[in-house]
Structure formats: structure tokens, C-alpha cells
Amino acid sequence: MSSRRLAAVAAAPRAESPLASPGAPRRLIAVLPGRAALARRALAFGAGAVLASAFAPLEWWPFAILCPAVLMWLWEDASPRDAAGTGFWFSFGTFLAGTYWLYVSIHDLGKAPVWLTIALMLGLVGIMALYNALIGYTVARWLPRQGMWRWLIGMPAAWLLVEWWRGWFLSGFSWLSLGYSQTDTWLARFAPILGVYGITLLLLVSAGALVALLRGNTRARLTAAVALVVPWAAGAALGPVRWTHPSGAPVSVAVIQADIPQQEKWQNRYQDKILDRYRTMTESALGTKLIVWPEAALPAPANNLLPYIELMDRETQSRGSSLVMGVVRASADGEHYYDSILALGKKASWYSKDHLVPFAEFFPVPHFVRNWLRLMSLPYESFSRGGTHQSPLPVAGLELGPTVCYEVGYGSYMLNMLPKADALVNVTNDAWFGHSSARYEQFQMARMRALEEGRSMIVATNNGLSAIIGPRGRVLASAPPYQRYVLRSSVTPRAGLTPYARVGNWLIVSLCALGLAGALWAGARRRRTGTGSAHPLHTRSST
Image (cartoon, rainbow, N blue to C red):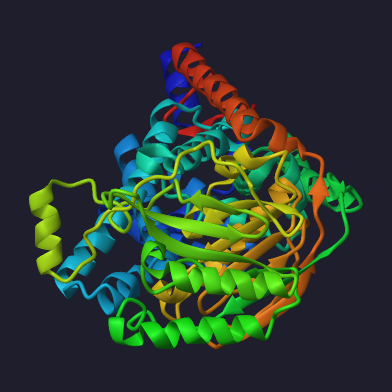
């Protein structure tokens, strides 16, 4: 062939490959080349902020698929640096919109100055955003440029592993994990099998499948369609399955929602008023087998209120009731404080919170910084951990698996109480959240824990949302928020272990680690053979 003909062939326009057809939507980003990165990050920030609406109280759950799909689409053809920035701003938007209530907790109720409140909020949001920046860099730097290894395996596996990591690293922050958004969909039926992270993975595979439908060839699109349909069909088929079974008669329960304003909680002049309110409300529920008070119900350490506790114990037991109360207690030497649950029945038993909240319940800072916090009118006394090997609370014929407030966000942590625990209880004081979405987000976590463990859960809060949750995550009874209320219902003890209760998160984490390793290998192999082109829209392979 002559050199002139070779030149003519090289200059001829190529037929568009099956992967090229969806390139048109990306011109929304590339229309102003000089501002493409800024446009990409702005779109990522908006999609991330919208993702927060997938969780309670709005529960617009489809966004848990659509918003990650937008980010995955934005990662297509991006450089590692650009992908990291895009991932950062996506997650920044999610946590800014999803944890805005920190302003209420830190400033309005904690009395921190505005500048410090904003600094703490942006610090937390920024740290959370770094996790998605890591995912973006990994995706762009090492995964294949296109194909099933990228869309259905690599990106979902990398995202899930990082989400799991942020749930425990440096004590962890599991808030807004994607799987929580599905408590009322068919995917919730995977919770007893795979846990919340398994549901997260199914959502991420669905998001990757949407990208494959846009970017892939016919074969890739057929595979993506199957990946979208199968989890929902399987979830529907799991409807009749019961993983645990009743092990005793129903036990009547009353939850005391006293609605104590946080501003009055620790004021000495309100102490008698608070104690009288709890006593009066409890008297109205006497005869119920189990009466539950919320977190830190007593307005002083339990050590200082022993006569009152003994009085309540006598009154409840004389009417056939047992009392469970959230209290703050001090060690015998007064050197340590614990956020605890006291169960009063045939014998007294204790549980003390083990998973503490950094900068709220313990302060990993030098003493001179704690003194500064005191001058700024912030809490500065640290709680001590209760220990990881505590036993369920034997009370009212039940073995209650207890958690205090924030601990309900850690599914594998709660498995330590099984199989002995036949019901669950979570006490919390959501008055710290004001009238924000935080209490609804945390309540959604409690519902997921009931699903994962196949146990009923009693949720006792100061001002809502107090509720009884069934073993399938349904709310069986609830109290109206922001008012005094005695919630009456019952729970049935249950025995047996769900598949998730047997293995925890290790199955899903191990599978994702293997999947990511395979995707990284595929990416390295394609780079060595030259098939991992930097311009995947002009390649024909999608597998």
C-alpha cells in the first residue's frame, strides 16, 4: 500500500464504537474546556447533597443509586487528581447536608462559639470527604478504563471497602452509610444475610450498572440490566423467610418519654422537677412487666441518687414491674464516669457504653486543652469505656442486648450479645439534636440493627423517637416526638441466629477485597498489553 493511501486511511473518520454513543451527555461537562474540572466538581457536590435525601426522614431511596451513579459517571476519563477532587466534593456535599444538625448540637446546645462550631463541622465533613477522594484516585489510577471489571466490580468494591473502613477507623463514623436508606425496600431483606454493608454493595453495583448502560456495548448493557433486576427480584423472593423464631410469650413494655429540655437537664434547680416527672409517668405504667427510661434519665450521677433509685425499685417491683433506666454513674473512687444502663429486677445489673463519641464523650487532647474547653463553656469531662465483653441484661424474663445512643450505628459490635440476647434495647437522648433530621437518621440505624439480628428492639428516647421495632425492621408502635408520652406495647423474645449474626461483616468485606484485587489486576494487565487506553470511548472491548 502506498504512503499516500496509508495517509488517507489514517485521516478517514472512524466508525463510532458502541462505547462512544453515550459521549454526548459528557459534553455538558466539556463544553467549556477551561472550566471542565470546576463544572465536574460542582455537579458532584450537588449530587452528593441530594444523596442525603435518600435517608430518613425524606427516604427518597432511589437517590441512593442515582447519585453514586452520577459520581461514577463523572469519574469516567478523569485523571487521578481530578477524580480525587470530584469524589471529595461529592462526599462533602453529602455530609454537609446530612450532618448539618451538628450546628444545633455544638452551638445551640453546647454553647460553643460560632467560629468554633463551623470549624468543627467543616473539619468532620472534610475528613469524611477525604474517604471518597481516596476512592476516586484509586478508580482513575488503577482500575480498567472501561468494562465489567470497572463498573460492576472494581468501583463498587472500592467504595464499599472505604465505607466499611470509615465505620471503624479512629473509632469510626458510620453515619450515612448507603445501605441505611433501604429500610423500607425489598433490599432490606438482605440485612439478615449480608448486613447494612451488603445492602450498600447491592446499591453500588446498581449504580455501576447504570453507568454501564450509558457507556457499554450491547453485551455490557445486557449484563448491567441483569445486575439491576436480580437483587430486587431476590429481595422480593426473600419476603416469606424468617431467620429467627419466638422463644417465649410476649412481654408488655412501657417506654417513658419525659421530654426534658436539654437546657434544664443538668441544672440543680430543675432536679426535683425531673425526678418527680419520671416517677409520676412511671406510676401510670405500673403493672407493665418492663418499664424503660431513656439515656441519662437521672439529672445527676446515680451514686448521688441511691435513695430515689431504691424507692423506684420498690414501687415497680411491688406492682410486678421491672425498671430499666439510663444513668450516668461514677466509679467507686470518683475518677471515672460511665454512660450506663441500670436494670432493676430480681437483681440489679449494669451495662456501660463502650463505643464513645470523640469530642463529645471523650476528649483525646491534653489536659490544658480540656481546661480551655471548660472556659469556653463546653463539656470537658471524659467518659470511660465500659468494655467490649459485657453481658445482656436479664430483666422481666428477657435477656436484653443493650446499646446506648450512638452505639446503635455499629452492627457488628452488637453481635457480641448474641445468641444469648433475645431482644434489644437502645436508650438515647435525642434532645441534643434539636428539631433536626438526626434523630430520624439514627432511628433508621436502629431499624437496620433489628433486621440484621432478627430481634425486636425497644428504643427509649428523651423526646422521640421512642418506639418498638419488630424483628423485620417494622415500627410496631411509636411515640409522637417532642412531647411527654408513655408508649405501651410488647416485645416477643426470639431465638436463633441470622446468617449475618454468624459471620458479621467479614464475608462481604472479604468478597469486596477479592473483587477489588481482581479489578486492580485487570487494570494492570490492560495497561501492560496496551488495551487500557486513556481514551476508552474509542475502544471496542467492554469486558
